[in-house]
Amino acid sequence: MLPIARANDGFLYLDNIKGVIPVGTSSKDSIELIKKYIDNWLHSTLVIQKAEDNLTEEQKNVEAQLNDYRNSLITYIYEKELVKQKLDTIISNEEIEEYYNNNKGNFELKDNIIKVVYVKVNKKAPGLNDLKKWYKSDIQKDKDRLSDYCHQFAENFYLNEDSWLLFDDLLKEIPIQTYNKELFLQNNRYVEVSDSTNNYFLNIKGFKIRNSLSPLSFESTNIKNIILNKRKLQLITKMKQDIYNDAVNTNKIEIYKNELQKK
Image (tube, rainbow, N blue to C red):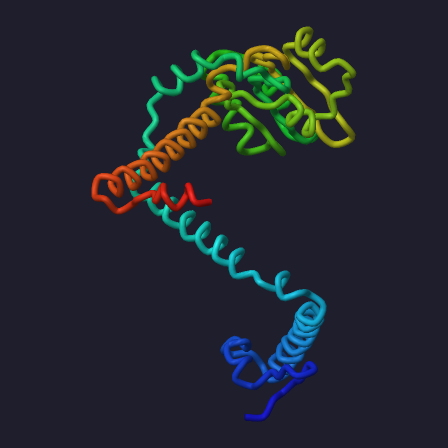
């Protein structure tokens, strides 16, 4: 078999590049892919050869590291499959609330958060006077009208007033200039600002400032992940202990103390 490339005493053969070219690739693209493959092979082979020439036999003995890596990889795959098959992923609201109440010290806000109704609309949009009334209103009929209006005319909007948002994320959307965010939240309920093309309407329904206790609803997803991770660790720990106990009970393991004493 004729080689297609050589790097010192190493050779690359045509069979080595089978499968490199995807089916349906044009002749021109195929040639480019082969050239790139050969170039990469030459570079990597030359580096490996240089390493082989300059490292001691002890340095080149990587069997132990490869075996450790293989064992770690197999263990990881087994644990992943175990979690996939046996992990209970159902977490009740009661569990979330209990964890929150027992760990409130871990849920200090690092940022300001708000509940808000927010609308961004072009200055030329119709019905701005109605919009100014609706975005402040707590009447359900007005909320429905606001929703209809936003879906027709708004450039951007957020009407889920029961969910918490990071105040900094909202400030990316609205041209508000403030040097004290906490003071701004404490002293404003309805905010109307504009730029050259748009009007911005903001109804702050609630807020919590940083360093205060983060609300349960804001931490719910985070708590679910914490509980799931704890369950994963418990499942894996139990699996390892069960395997060990089974081996002990069936005499599959033994420690040769006499041999240890000789050492």
